[in-house]
Length: 572
Image (cartoon, rainbow, N blue to C red; front, side, top):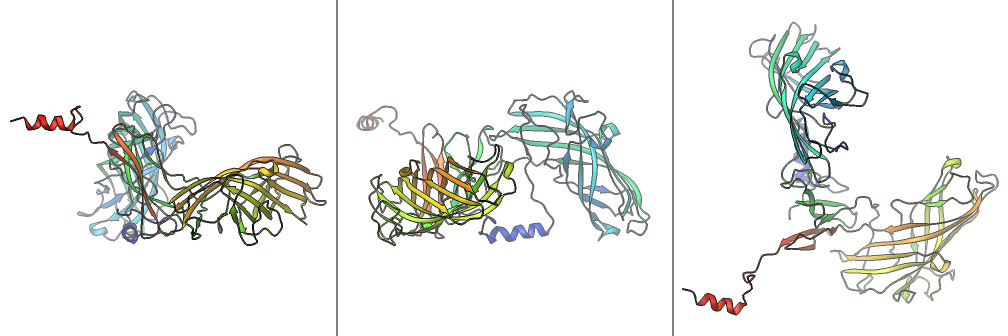
């Protein structure tokens, strides 16, 4: 399977990178498909904000007023649309921030906006060697015909009614004006098609056949000194519609937002390459599938704390996972009780730096010093005794806004795990935090700061651990605990926390590792759905969600094999 990947994380594919650099050096731009959100009414607001209109084959030209055989070509996008009233160009009023209102010459809507023409300017003939990049601000008004909001495909006529743009204070052009629009006697008919994508957004396929007028006067001291004229010509400009080929994006971060043969289908990943060391995925194949159908699930919300541990020689690993850390992707520890109303102290950071020790006699299990686990515990598998550190960034809110600290709290812990099958490529078993205690001493802000958790403290800490063998023989560790914790604190005299004290009980999920991309969804009728994992030489995995149609058997008409063969042999 050929990799499709550019620069992500620390990986670089020169087969793609070098052509990309050459492309950028030539000044060309990769076309970006025009996709805009539903405006809440089952359609899209126009103009399509964030999109550009460009010409695939033509350029704007200045011809009149130049020597024979000499032109100035102006090539670039019409875009940067803003809903700001169109710089006084529009014929109707709109509230600030609004782009469209009912009305106009086509019986649908009128649209008022501003934008910019970003142009590469190139001289030919006697002006060969004249090159500039300029940006011309404009105001515009367009009209559109009626459409039916809610329809998955909406096609309607459009008209460039007015567009006026002018450049000021330029060293080469003392005057440079662009004028479009039927209201100026310069027809600009067009058409727009909105196609609803599986994401709920709309793909915008829109064009205008513009008759334009360019007025210019060259400035003294410029190569254009003495030249002036007015050129009228035509150009077709259009948005870039989404591709029809369902393929990965150039940087392999996802799939192109294409219009699928079934409009309600989406272009979704079907195969990825997953790096267990970084948790980064590179999309390799995409298919048009129903959003509810069997496909890959990529969760970019998980923290980048990939956890890989070596085999302990018994076809599994020793827990806790050394060199890894447990943290919460979207929650923090909290101190609430004992603080003014509306105030909190948030404590955010990893639990890590695990050491196998039972020198304090903290654990209930007779684990020798230097060992982390022995058979036993409440779940019928193993018991684990270890120490670690909570590295916490403290942030005050409300009345404690501005209170910020970084603390390292030593923690003693005991965890129990359920049975597993050493040697299996996938090992999934329950986990439980039985004891989770830490205390801070001699701090200028806290006379008392105790953190405790664990079922033995009456504070449940259930969890689960998954071990996945990698091509290297190591294991990727995906583990979590839903910890109910209790934080007891007392502010120190002279501190911002003086006079405050309390005990807060709450819950937090802490986890380590990044979950493998997985398959999820409904398997289509008359198909089988499988998830495949193929190790690669660089210790990554190619993971695919495969849908295989079931081929009807030749015996599907109900004949028994023998009877059918006998029937067949009796025919002429």
